[in-house]
Amino acid sequence: MTAYREVRVRTPLALKILPVLSIASFFFLWEFVVRSGIVPSTMLAAPSDVARLFVVKLTQADPDGALLQEHAWVSIQEAFTGYFLSLAVGIPLGLAMGWFVMAEGLARPVFEIIRPIPPVAWIPLTIFWFGIGLPGKVFIIFLGGLVPCVINAYVGVKMTNPTLIQMARTYGASDWQIFRQLCIPSALPMVFGALQIALACCWTNLVAAELLAADAGLGFLITMGRRLAMPEMVVLGMVMVGLTGAVIGVVIDCVEKRLLAGIRR
Amino acid sequence: MSSSIANETTCSFTDRRPWTLRRVLKTRPFLYAVSLFCFFYGWDFLARSLGAEGSSSLARPLEVLAALVDLWDNELAELKLLGHIWASTQRVLIGFSIAAVLAVPIGLAMALNRTVNAIVKPLFDLLKPMPPISWISISILWFGIDETSKVFIIVIGTFVPCLLNAYNGVRLVEPELYDVIRMLGGNRRDEILHVCFPASFPAIFAGLQISMSSAWTCVLAAELVSARSGLGYIIVQGMNLSDPAMVMGGMAVIAVVAYGTTLLLTALERHLCPWKRKIAGL
Image (cartoon, rainbow over all chains, first blue to last red; front, side, top):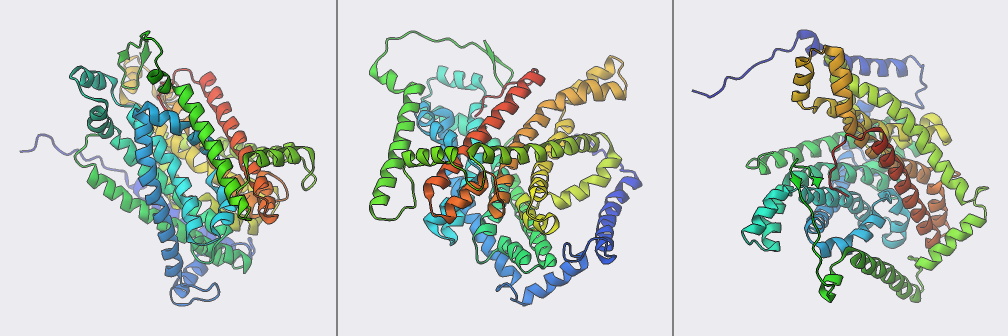
């Protein structure tokens, strides 16, 4: 016997149909607007053209020099290198800043100087330093992911219930013990929140980095589409960026659920 | 007495102990000073040692300052520094206002009405994962390279966080608050006016803050790709002239201006929404 019964709330039929209808009419309108010539085809491609180009690009490298999956792979590689780098640096830094006065005192001013600068602004400087290869882009993405990681880890530690800290002190726990056994576990939900936010930041900055300096990748595909005046390629690039980002987001969400399974939210 | 996020009231007191060297070393102002000194000295040292090798990829702090003074006095593309700052700020403010005025009501309507939600949510979910920066190319195709395309990018970039936060703000209102207003005999209208709006206000403002930083990213990206004015233009010019001092000067100005707008929003929030609970944070 279960302790509670599952309550099913039935959604009215209209609410089930409306989303489908809304998406369908969106695509229909889009297709119609382009086909009928209200928007010239030099400015916007019909969804059917985009779909056709998608299929073609899977097997054909022209006119931008790489297959679609190669572009996607380059982007994913860059994004993940920068992402994991920012996690590896940002989370420990944020946790330490939240608890240790020394760490906060030394790191915070520099962090506050760097924080308001949008990562995009680093692009020219990065090109000076690293050229347009992988390290430069990884650096930009790293900067983009770093800020949310540090902030979330910091806030997570700061939000530790002060009563628990006082109790631990009363029982004679050392600073390090409190940090390790109290602050870190209580900061974990915030830290996992940072995983998603940082990923979104990384992905945005990836596109920016690739728009300005790249020879492959999804952002590059968008730029090439504009240069070649092929709106279907621009839209394909945008769709691919969105799609890949969404898929990665879902994967991270699953990982997060698995890891957080034992922790009460 | 200060109230913490966990809703306990904690007493804070300071004890007076004599100032020893150990304690001075651990005070915040001292550590901040050390940190800043190390940062600028390290930067200067790095720039000098790199400059000695003949490569000029990093400017010394004083050179950056000199570049800023130069931009202040002399014109770059017919505008002085203040003109460029104003050009960027103007774009941000216009785009931000348009997006906030559109997105917040839509988000509220989505959270309050299931039919609106069923229609708008799928479309929104479709467009949400595309980074705003990926719209730059298509906005240039649509609007050319003048103001409209930049404002468009900013609207796209600020729309999503505004809408999401308004939506989630209403949905995450504590149900007890509704119970209270119902028990006091309120109808649906009272619920919305007296519970939904005030309770979701902090979340909406948080969304505006996120939007603001997103807007700065967008305006920069748009200006980096194509512009004749603005802070992004200064950076690009610096890059084209391979003048790192100018690039870093531009970055410094952006940091200051972006920080300023954030402060402004925070002040506005404190003024408009004094019931927000304090969260110890950055």
